[in-house]
Amino acid sequence: MEGIVGGIHTATLLGSQVMGLYYGGYRYGYGSGYLSYLVFILPALLLGIYAQSKVQHTFKKYNKISNSRRMTGEQMARMVLDRNGLTNVRIEHISGELTDHYDPRDNVIRLSTPVYNSTSIGAIGVAAHEAGHAVQHAENYAPIKLRNAILPACNFGSSIGPVLIMIGFLFAGNLFGRSLFFVGIVLFSLVALFQLVTLPVELDASSRALKVIRDSGMFVKEDLTGSKKVLKAAALTYVAALVTSVMQILYYVTRFRGRDCK
Image (cartoon, rainbow, N blue to C red):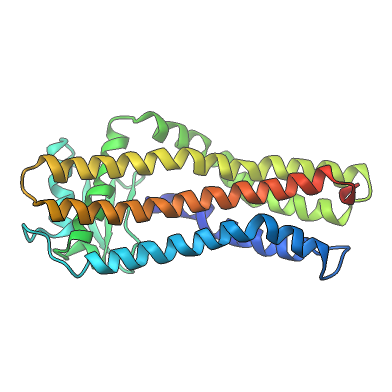
């Protein structure tokens, strides 16, 4: 949910999938190229659609149920921050839905309209999760440090990798094209690496959120159960993104190793 990483997470994957559908048929017309691409990517796309639908449905469900303390999302995030000595971290309202994130550059948690002033179970789960990210940064949580370290390279790979792959397809009959194609695959693989590192970061933030809800003694079992379902659904979107990237890479590797790319 940490919106600072969204560029790699969504736009690149959609763009590369469209690219794959186009160049999957390059030199073959509407035939084997498209079919081979769909064999790899369709299951991942279906998982992504399911994950997105699941998180929206689950959040909407628990956004209609008030938590037992009538605590708002903003108050929940503030409680988590204060308990960890992070009184310097600000909390702001941001428009949209499920746009919640912690921005370490400005040291601020931004909570969306359905979370900031809401007293729902979903709101406290999401707010505590974002506060968990702030705590991770304050504690120099190792996966966070690793993710920040590889972020520039991953941004570069996500932008340049697909371009090199496309050019490699255009010159697929010679060594130059195959070399560009190979380098493009390596660079695009950084996207999957980034998502692989991001997954434990998100799971840990959710674990911290649920621990606060459980151990504070302020909430009832239903609050914890609902928050857990919301955060579990959100985590599935990161799993789906990782699976999509891996399947995309496997497709490109298969094409590279096949005679069609020679």
